[in-house]
Amino acid sequence: MYPSPLQDIQGDLETGEIIVLDGATGTELERRGAAMNDKAWCAMATLTEPELLRQVHEDYIRAGARVITANTFSTNRNMLEPAGLGSRFEELNRRAVEAAREARERTGAVERVAVAGSMSHQLPIIEGADQRDARAVPTPEVAESNFREMAEVLAASGVDLILLEMMSDPDLANPAIAAAVATGLPVWVGFSVRAGSSGLPVSYTRPELSAAEMFDRIPLEGVHVAGLMHSKVNTIAPTLEVLKARWSGPLMVYPDSGFFKMPHWQFVDIIPVEDYVAYSREWIAAGVQVVGGCCGLGVEHIRALSDSL
Image 1 (cartoon, one colour):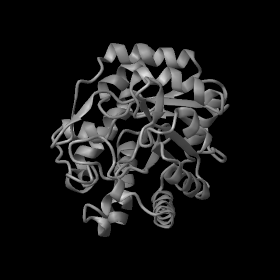
Image 2 (cartoon, one colour):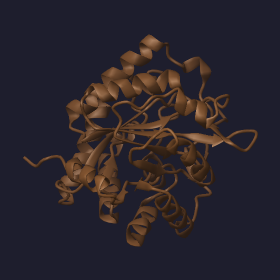
Image 3 (cartoon, helix red, strand yellow):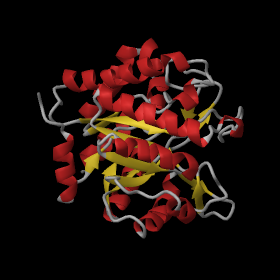
């Protein structure tokens, strides 16, 4: 049995190396023809398109990613229950991790590539908008139970680390982080921001919170890597400075680009590859060590980033 490749990755981070993450999974599946669920986005693609999902993971590995992310972003109960898919919770999470691990084995990258289990506090969104439906926000007790269950399932399924994604609401991010840390696995946290009415970055889901207020209300004890994800490229640099005033560990950035064109979750108006690479090099110069892509950013972006490094 091989030791977790995360040991080498963590060692490289300590010596200042750059680690390349994969790019988007959901939008890449959609781009390749996988059907999206109206309420749970890419969750069911794990079962309906397992070979396509493995191919996406394999392509990211061949493009140079040292961390691939299981298709579990929208398989938390907070998303599955409103979609009527709560009974598939364990199956979807377990099979998603299996697909990522199988892709790693098929590419001969077991010793080099880590599998991250994505855990978000994503909720159903309002039809025709990009903001969550406030009626779907779980109570603190339900949120804590859901995150604890998911973290334990991801750990039991064999992920190397838990990747907390789109953290922006302290009421949900804090129990999610606590659940991930409790597994004993390394935990990486990705925050999300958007430009507020003043032009300054604010919490993605709680725009009444400035980026600074969001960070102050989400402590990072037990976290190994922290940074920004699913945020526009022009919000990254100013928000990084706010985070760096509060976090001295390894920094991570993987932005999104473009927007969803509903009703089929199609992502359009994506940043050109060369512009993404130029931004990435600026973030690396500012101290970022973990770089990848989120919604809209695909294999070609990750390959170009890897080649540039």
